[in-house]
Length: 179
Image (cartoon, rainbow, N blue to C red):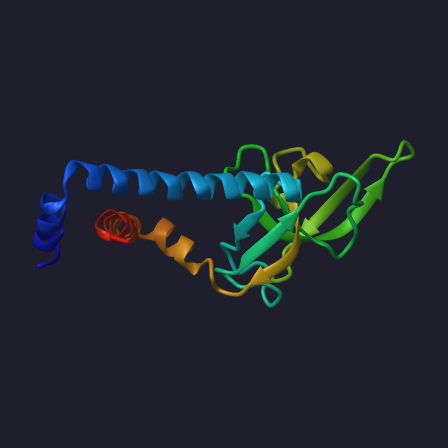
């Protein structure tokens, strides 16, 4: 049995080996966090990698596609560009295409978005009274993607038991694996 083998392996480890495995696990977690923070600095985006969660951008992007984002302040927003934005009061960012741009005399830019697979623009998604998005709402702009890799994230959110099983197996592997 898997659980008995795991317990036997842990019992056979001396304290030094167990501390080493826990430290190894901590190093993996901290390395992942450092890589994420480094990507944030390089890309200028608070979330440099996002997963497409709905079919609103089909056929350009499908549910589960992994998007790579940048958000450089100096780059102007253009019509046709795919942006990821947050709406006040909503936790999950939205991936849609810029449909129209409205530029004021002072250079302030507002824009309207729409999902490629949606019949109407996104004004119904924005907070009440908001008709345009501003640059402050943008999390990033799509610069590349990997198809369907993010489906694991969707599965872990839709099925919490799957998430706990994956995390348990990864933790078990790190603790039991010996170099």
